[in-house]
Length: 218
Image 1: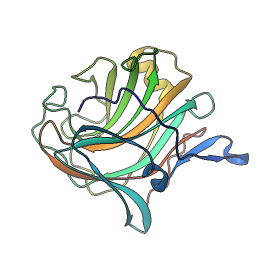
Image 2 (image 1 turned 60 degrees about the vertical axis):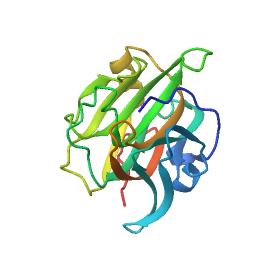
Image 3 (image 1 turned 90 degrees about the vertical axis):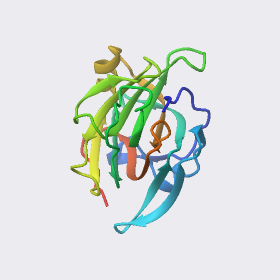
Image 4 (image 1 turned 45 degrees about the vertical axis):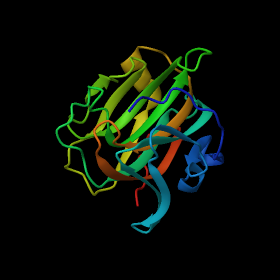
């Protein structure tokens, strides 16, 4: 799947004050209002009830489209990106470092503009990898402006909710060697367009925080 290069809308934020300072919560209902960036067909997005909670479902049947939000996020205030995710399967036999294998049952990514032109964007893609070990990183096969990081690897946690927390500042520094204080967008998706695979992913508790405490998953 070709990486997200631009985002063009501001929508759906809940800003939490007082004890949570400037924490940003991005609820499933808000994510459903975000625009779609289609790469090949349309991943199906819906709000569903799962494990006693309203969550976002992303169902790909050989398609790839992302829900994305353009909004400047101050990483000095809220450096930690957190979310919960679950997948129903992984894709066997892929070379995820190749164009033909650039598919993931679930991914969440953040982007920053590096210039005025649409393609002048860097992104960090957090992926549920099918074949790479958790902790692996590699450059996207379509562009060196996108770096991928496997947070989950293989099928060991398929069917389970997994909580994630990432320090976005640190990840940009590690993957690009850049000091980053703001980003300009966040997106999520399930995709299978290059390999023709099908998967369903569920997302909950997406947001940015001043705390590195993991979210409570459904």
